[in-house]
Length: 114
Image (tube, rainbow, N blue to C red):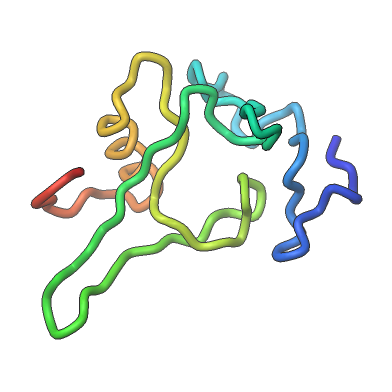
């Protein structure tokens, strides 16, 4: 259970241990779990994370796509690029594409991935 004393001041979401049950009834994919890094921080994704930064260069200023995270995820209610946990055996590029599809519903034509 989340201890109320472990709340992040910025958005009220715990930055420590998370509930043991998931929102989905499905079994999480291998590597999709909470883990603690060498700096003693809690992160989602035992195999790391990957995401895509979408940049539209038309016009005088570039435009970037950010998504607001759900309340119940790591760093909930903050803004970030579409992304998430890398599954066991998955490349970072494959994970980034999968996560973007899950979060925004489609992949725009990509001119460069780096």
